[in-house]
Length: 387
Ligand code: MG
Image (cartoon, rainbow, N blue to C red):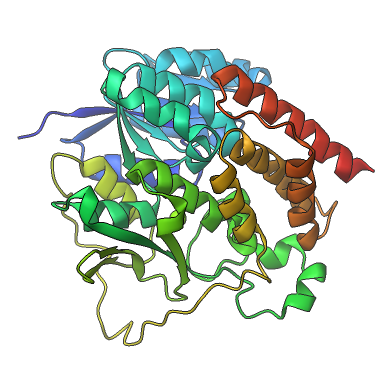
């Protein structure tokens, strides 16, 4: 019988956080919610805390702290606020696994803190690897921390690579659904609205990642995430559009053999796999696919002209240093502006490119360099939007 793992969920009120709690509730003899962290969703955080009674709860937004504190006063839960509290809480000795499910760059400091404390990380915040992959992966060996991917594609790579030698990998084949605009004519993309982009065909996700899927920036991020997680060159990572999202990704080996991992497009599956590692898979009656439902699986090349952020991501991976960090910062600002109807869909790419062209290059960035590059790039991208 495995020991009960104490789980810290950074971003418990988001899509991944809520699904992680579903799994914790399903396996009370395997998992316990130890720490719940939310940014601003106080009501849901309170509801989750009353149900799971974790040792600690953190609401990052300080103005909401009094309300959360008061609502949980009758329970033995320590309520805290602020991002420093998160960095501190993830290092506590009784925290076993940290699920990093916050959105974007905001997850970097707490992820680094958990890595330095040698924790098991179920990594759902891909932006932290895009921004600072060199820093994070460089720390794994000395701290004993392990990254288990929660992203479905990377969970697929992980499963395909069990029992394989790194030298035998020829390439990673990263599948993409193609997003809501796969069949939309390129010339119409200038006028699509946030509400159109938020209709993802297969995956139910938060707003930021859904827009990233629509621009395919998400797939560019995942290419960089895979590069760091599996120690691969970006040149050996190929993106293939697979509209059914049943093949979660594939690995081609030097002998021509290809392994694929399949399953329904439901994030519970990769979260379940990541949480089960390395003890073993979590049995369930749900999420079973039948070939009758998916008699035909199709694959096509991505359209780099229609989705130019794919090329931007490969170039950022090639350039390395702080370039992926700058790309991510500009993208976060541009996506927020698109969601607020302040810019058009195609301007997201323009803002990212202009910011990369403007930003000073740093070849071997330290943590402080990443913080500075992120801040400067965000300010510059915002000034482009304002003008
Ligand atoms: Mg994914």
